[in-house]
Length: 176
Image 1 (cartoon, rainbow, N blue to C red):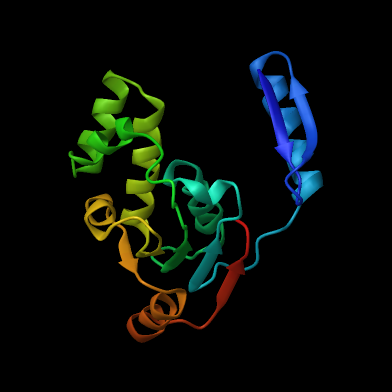
Image 2: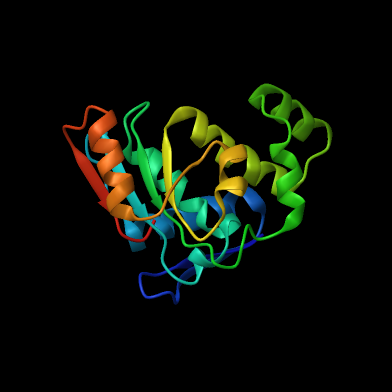
């Protein structure tokens, strides 16, 4: 395994290599040192942005949802600012959204693992666990089958969250 930790400015902050488990553990520790933020109390609303170049495709942008999940209380809305002007990232991910039931999706993924299937499952799980309000260049027709709720602007997505959910606390993650 060869893994890198990307620093705040986009450069490489650390590298770990070797046997999978020890190298993975080492890169986790390096990430914590480079980015070591502690999570606050879970928030009622999380607004997460995706910085360049990760914002170009949904496959890359979706990783910010994982960061948002760590900061959101169960069921809390997430406003996901994911431009994705390069599209979904790869057409092989899209067929995974045809099976709407998460349990069937996971069973299919276990039978025939594919990284794009795992990415699709990650997106689907987030959309099942939280209302995910997306501001993106991706079409509504592409986002809705994923369980994502498209909005034209961040302001409209945030206003929707404030109007439709109980929001007592909010966390903003500029570059998830």
